[in-house]
Length: 244
Length: 244
DNA sequence: GGCTATAATATGTATAGACAAATAAACGAA
DNA sequence: TTCGTTTATTTGTCTATACATATTATAGCC
Image (cartoon, rainbow over all chains, first blue to last red; front, top):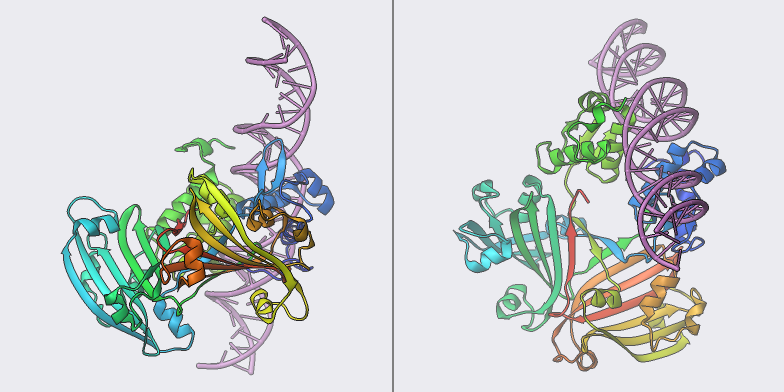
């Protein structure tokens, strides 16, 4: 979102002030869900401006999901406010360093192989394929922070074979070099098995937060990754303000 | 005037087609981060349209974070693509019924009390306050699906005392009647304690996914809720496509 | 060179006017 | 009544134009 002067302040652009006015009415509850907001020509009167200007505001509110627009009927405050939030799925290296902690990384295992049936399911590919399978550990201040279990579709990203993942985490390289068009995240909880417990330095059976992410580029699978965090150690936090 | 507009158009609006063209160039990587996208007057030429139309496209791309615009310099493809996703935090009743399963609900405990120190921390309030504390269970097809542990700030929502939460889950009432302006979500994993295990019908120690949500209305705390799901039973899925 | 004033240019916002498309509401026929 | 048709209204998109504003490039000066 572009930042102008203050959104509602005098001096801000006219359409920003109009938008702010309407948003306040909506999020404050003064206009409850289902309420019909004034017609464009009414808002033109109210603000002494052209229709293009109020149209821009209402279209933006519709894009933001605060109103629904229907020809001939008008614009209406959206029904049930969806409980949605922008979730930041961080690059662990960047995230840890942002906290001012020392980041550590260790490659536990790497192998190139013809995709097994299980690999094909995880990546969502059919037929023969070559994959790079990695397992590595992320550390913050010497403490294990996450186990990463990743498959990369070599066909989609041939350059990946030239990278040295013993010094650089695969995610850091991928986000910088491989654009993606679609991603899916799945978040679950599981009990640590013996391997994971040993690698993370926790008790077997301890609860772990699991984040699985799959990315595609124009429908071609790129990578599937599973990040396993000790449950107490890691929070995913999402903040949401409708105005945003 | 509009002779050009119909050419090669599958019905979509002109600015939609332009936007799509540019997005493809960006997300495909054809225009890498930092690349200068054509000036508005160049796009006018390319698409034989007015500046307002290409301006609308570029402003929308800027709002979406795909480009950065700088006066006198031009518009540039944004730097690092952030790993973010819109996470749908569903209303459980709606979610379960959408799957075609039977929703069940049971109020386990409800009490009105003066906020304890712990309550005040959870809600983020200071001083004296009255809260409503609920504990309830959500079921899908007779199976326990989640334990909900909720605090409601009675000052912020006095009407809450008039509701009968033995038949209607608090979330269903709240989302329909109490607008909020800010929300925070926190997702963690924990091992089921004996109480939770009994209520969910799982083994003590089994991994659970915990979603904590706090909402405010103009900085006034409304409610704090903790949802505890059996780890195997529940997935949070977030899909993200830049095109939206 | 380094500094400042000036011009050039791209974006930011706003207007008035035009026609298209969808559809709620009124109307009329069976 | 009920069904189809017409009409009126609202939103959707686009144009051509205008001026404001930020910022880069340049020219001129010391």
